[in-house]
Amino acid sequence: MAMYNDIPDHRYRFVDLVGDAFVVGAGCGSTFHFVKGFRSSPAKGGGGRLAAAVRAVCTNTPRVSGSFGAAMAVICALESVVSLARQREDHWNSILADTASYGLLSVRRGASAAALSALYGATFFTGLAGAYLAAESWHGRLLASGREWRIKDGLPALVPIRRISIPPCPAPAVAVVHGDPANAGTVE
Image 1: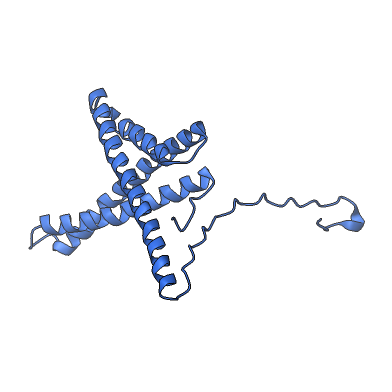
Image 2: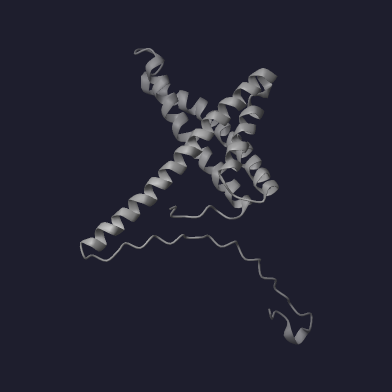
């Protein structure tokens, strides 16, 4: 049982996930390039290892985080297209979108490389969706067995956590100002 619903509107989900991918890319890229710059620099000269590590982070992290954000933008756009075309929300949307995005992101290396990357993406994300469904099923059984044990011991049963849904943004209010001099500046 999931605690939270997905963000309902595709535009907001797109912005949210691309921003998350950008932040993850910045964090992972800065850590990786800091360690790489620290280890590959000479111990003496050139300002030291710490300065070389900081230069490596400043040079490479924007590229890595931009690549993560761009890849997530392609994935989110394709997932929204697949979801709107199929008129349902399930794991097949993400599997199809990730397969297509893996193929599209590697098409510059040729058709065979794109097909192979799409196959890898399909295999990986099908396995990931299967693992998610298995974990969700296991979690549901765990909650049910916990409920039974609590009732047997005379304790109140645990209630499932309500799903929290994020309502769509309301339409902006339109202010109407009357042109009558007596009502100048009034807003309805």
